Length: 393
Image (cartoon, rainbow, N blue to C red; front, top):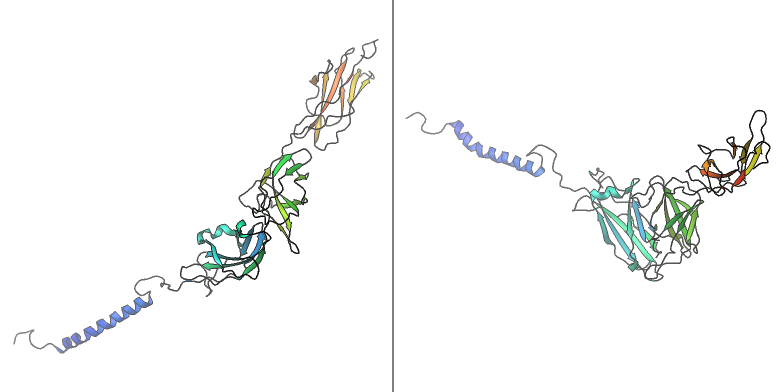
């Protein structure tokens, strides 16, 4: 018999029987790894279960004008206490009823995508304003409002509903839209057209107005149109008013004014309309002071080696921003003449040593404020130094 032929060896027979069993065992392990994930390739295991954000528990709703302002804290964890990788999207639901007992099904009114959530963040809370259309009201109607919110990081499942925020929504006047200002020396005078009711005639009577002022340039923040300070209440004109004077201002500063209409709910709270147009006023002092009064001219005879001369005096100006005075001299009646001082004089007196004997002079004085505004001349006075052996001119 030739070498290599004949019956197989015992070792080869064992290999042929065991090989299929080994293959089936290894294939089973592969399938098991694929099902569990993570064995076929390195890296984090694939997460099949979507994260569900925790529900909001501090939703609050208040009426501001004909809007409802919602505020709440955004959850940062899922229901199984895992951190959320990004802010969840926000779904806002609203139900309106014409009376507290009327049923109303909540409906989705807006969705805020995750990428836009940051634009609604204010001091660690989310704020959203829901305008109530005038068509929702009818005369003497009070709406019962109910709001809830849901959080979502996956299309598969949202959070549970938040706590329900309930409130009564009253028809309020439309915001004033024509606030105007006039700058005068003593005050900034605001004026407006009295508020008109809603088209449906549903607005309640106006009880008065609230005037607000902020210092600084306007910004995009409607809640605080003045960048340097928050709006402060500075006046409460009554319902019959259509103007308001603000005397507490400074020239050279910038102010932003708004006004709201106030409505007293019978047996309930005082509510305010929305803000009027934001009015920026930058008052400049272009108002000259009053002319000096009681100008007096006196002749001072020569004595002790000092030649004869003329002295002027006048009453101190009562205005608080006077920088000084200017003195003018002329040899023609009715002509202002030449200014005798280089810079405004801080005191109400002037000595004219440059007069010629025998000539007659006419003097006037003006007041100058710190903004450089000069008053009209005072009433003129006339006089002169007499020549030797002659009476005073």
